[in-house]
Length: 219
Ligand code: ADP
Ligand code: AMP
Image (tube, rainbow, N blue to C red; front, side):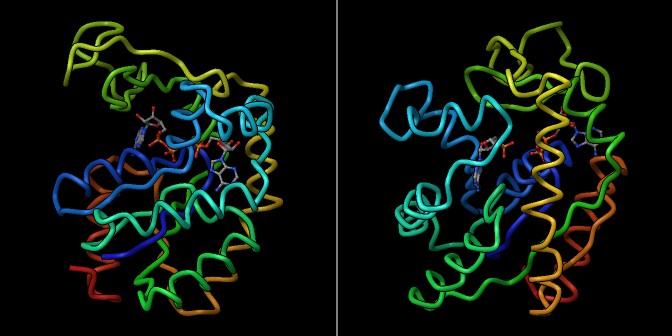
């Protein structure tokens, strides 16, 4: 299974990628997670990316593409991958196509997480993340058993700086302008699968598995 999870921030891509990664041996590649890790470690890449991320804008294409070129060639990608948050612009989609062609790897499907703005805003402003293992919670929709503590590893939960309401609105605008055109791009290539991401987590994962499985044989 080699696929892209496409959709607005807060649609549930990371949540569902974590479920699928457990069920099948797939690499879950989240460009946002890679960038945040670099910001935390203070690398050159992190320094380049930080101001774009803080403001809710996109990190320049050339930075992202060169980062992903390296990542897709790592050994864990050979048994399949989920790209979460990449590509996010037309040039990134073109670069991904060229890279996969060079590697002689087909892209099986692009799963579009269809969800309304209101749901996205509610999900992002309530999102909490474990500082140690990265598990994703929600203050209301998926609260941890003990407030502020990760069920899986006992780590402390935090709220991302860019999940504040003003930055969320900016990120949604950026999605509509720069990323949503990729829906057409992949629809024309016949690999787009739409999933109603406003439903419960269980319903979303089963529609991803059945839609993708039946149309593109991702099993
Ligand atoms: P994305 O990776 O698309 O930005 P996340 O997977 O981080 O989105 O999910 C955003 C927030 O929404 C998280 O707090 C998560 O717990 C919550 N969430 C994810 N999927 C659902 C769902 N199907 N129903 C309700 N809340 C959800
Ligand atoms: P995410 O974790 O996917 O919500 O991404 C968080 C932030 O990282 C985004 O708001 C962007 O600033 C940056 N980012 C992540 N992926 C990309 C990408 N493919 N292209 C450009 N910027 C990205």
